[in-house]
Length: 240
Image 1 (cartoon, rainbow, N blue to C red):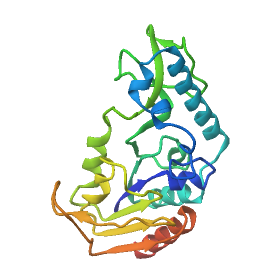
Image 2 (image 1 turned 30 degrees about the vertical axis):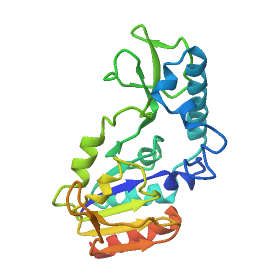
Image 3 (image 1 turned 180 degrees about the vertical axis):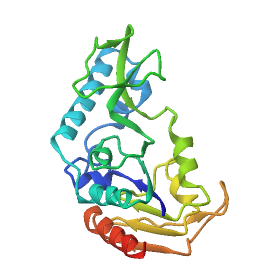
């Protein structure tokens, strides 16, 4: 089968990573302080605050492990299915869990890029500080901040909306953040699974700008990622 996974913070939460939902990462903190491109250009103090924020997130990512949901999705690939993971998460837990084709629509925490060359992406697993340079330019996290475009969106969207996709698995996301959510809403998959304790209303668009209609074949598991993904994977493996 050709399977597309569209994942959000809920799958990483079960490994112990903070989410961006209510009660998560942004509580008591202004998004503009740490995730807006305008803040980055406000000066050294603002840059340092943003770098420290992502240093903390990078450290936290090193301290956790992929959970059973990440491992189960990789199991589909090991069993011979073609699996593309499109994730809104910036951590590397899908890769560490065994998935080999992962598209990060919002960037990657373990990578960096210089201010003067957005196309140069370098691995960066430790702390990042003011004065850290690459080719003479300050480096910054390879994260998509508010006010910036999504360089991987076209690749992700094309993968998600191909006519021969058999299954779409939506896990751990509210589907509220666009344009990334269009990867799910515009699917041509024959079957859709939605896994989330508070599952979002799911439908597909008649056109890029049309109204949404209910997909004819949606299975919803109102559970956490570990429990729900296991159910999905078991069902797919039984059918294949």
